[in-house]
Amino acid sequence: MCGLVKDSTMTSTTYVVAAGGSHSSGTFLRSTELLQLDSDGTVHDRWIEGPSLPVAIVAGGAIVTPGGKDLLIMGGESNGNHQLASIYRLRCFRKSCSWNETQKKLAIPRSHFVIMSLPSSKADCE
Image (cartoon, rainbow, N blue to C red; front, side, top):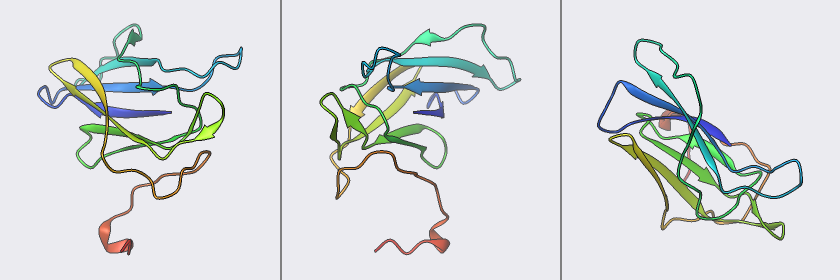
C-alpha cells in the first residue's frame, strides 16, 4: 500500500510511503519505508525505515486525507489470511512518523478493494 503524506509541522516536507505488503517468501510485512521529497522537487537519495504497522497487512486500501497530512490504511488481510476491518492512520510531525489505529472500523472486513476520494457534492454516503 502506498501514498504521500505531508509532515504536519514542516509544510515543505512530503514523504512517499510504502507500507505492508508481502515478501517473496509469502510473509506478510509490518514494515514502512519513507522517501523524503522537498518542496523544491528534491528527492532524497534513499528510502529510510519508517514506523512499523501495528499488524502485518497485505491487500488493504490506502488513501490520503484532504490536505495530505494523514495516510489511512483500511482493511486488508493479516497473517492467517483473515480480513480486517481496522483503519490505521499515519501522521508525521517534525520528521517523526507514527501509526495509530482509529476508533472507527469498516462495517464489513474486506481486502483487495479500491478506495478513492470523491468531493462531498458527488457522494451521498448517509
